[in-house]
Image 1 (tube, rainbow, N blue to C red):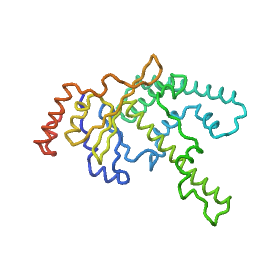
Image 2: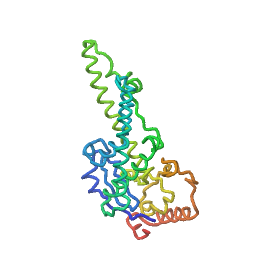
Image 3: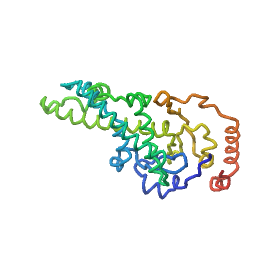
Length: 290
């Protein structure tokens, strides 16, 4: 299916009004070609309070993460058996709640692309939580460094973390901890953004759109058919691997069946697009939309 071209993606008015700080980023297209506008990267500006991103972070941080962080940070877990039992109970709660939400998502009818997006997120989390752990269902490593590991890897060599000659030891520790708290916070935000984008593109099969560079990141197996109209508008395609849910394994697995082979129909479309772009000016190419 060829997606309709959305003029708002390259509209200069929209660009100047909403996207002046981060001009490379626009948002996503769902499988119907509808735009989800994320004019700023997540975790910056208004997206701090975006209910969808808050929802994603809440369910992505699986209940046992809290226990893992306690142990790796060296905190004293007084009753490990109790903590594990609590985590298991919380995990069951997540699975039951997601079961309710996913059933609504599968059969709900809506014209709002953001509601569709929420529904697709519900189904993704429902699938992941069918495994014994979320990480197992997700099928990728999503463990972050703890604060000590983060400091050793990224901060110990920075000048801002070195003791000043006029500082007492107490002043130095307080200043270093403040910098570390801030850096570690944004490190986790950045990780969450990367996981969020990975889930949306590779797992939910949406398409990332960048306005300024006219780029589309997708795991679509027929990009020349799907993005025919976008390619006529000088967008470029970046194709990445696709993850699909294996119900028998209760987890997401890579889709490997000739993933990047190009069928003859795609090659013909590629040449057709190339010929139109060579002979027809940009402002008249809409006459050739599919």
